[in-house]
Length: 101
Image 1 (spheres, one colour):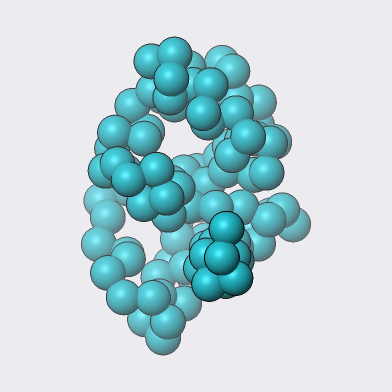
Image 2: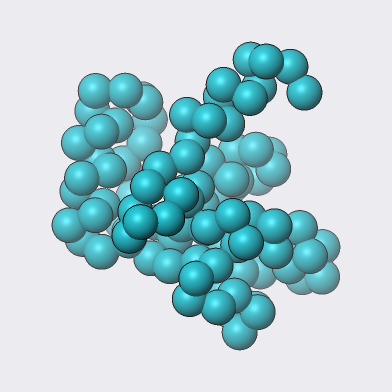
């Protein structure tokens, strides 16, 4: 992976509830699928994701995230629901869930 790729991924890591997490929309971008296509197998297999693997942002956390997007990333924040966020363990679980779906 090129240095530029690492920088892009690093910019997709946020800290919420004391954990480093990645947004479902950013992971979907990395997988080359729509966010809803990433979330469908996840939602069908939620029992495979303990609370410390995945969680949904609260309205307050989401608003904080949206304010960060206003000054940095473009194109984020136009969602109807708070995003799911994946911890490192949740990100590691994703390929299994996506291929078994």
